[in-house]
Length: 120
Length: 111
Image (cartoon, rainbow over all chains, first blue to last red; front, side, top):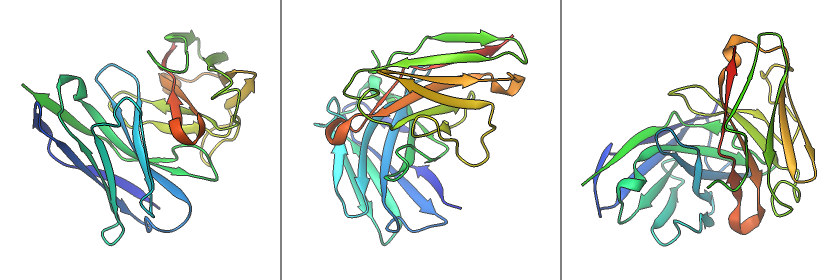
């Protein structure tokens, strides 16, 4: 059974770069037709899609974050990563990684989420 | 402001049915059959409940059903149970550039 686990610093200083990694276990990140995604949720608010990457490295980003976001994949480690630059208080949120099978059209597996706080 | 519009709250008594709407546009909900619904309990990750408008993943009770008409999708929870109390989010595929859009979420209360 495939599982996802986010990891990274829980506290990032304002104007710095937020870096998170999602480790895929129970299956290969390269097998099947999937997009690997980052999604975030500020406290008490809804979900926001940040971006996605395929195992081949093809990416798409939320237009509102595109200038600050980079998502990469390391198939040898079965991981994909998020970098969000020039963070501010509005980037404080729970960050989730999630899998999107192209044949299902939904986020079918989610990580447990990791809280990131931007400090001033 | 979320791209898809959901009512902020919904409620029903145990055993009753409740329907949550999710309104988008012809560029998302109305244009594709990739509408999905997620259940989120406090402090937990979202859980997929419905995909491709009306399909249920294995393990999701058949009390949960989905439908779509035009630019509006709906999630119906029948035979409400206490454990159904949660936040529910809809999502729609929105094309290769925008990819997905989320609804703002609906807090379902079981009275």
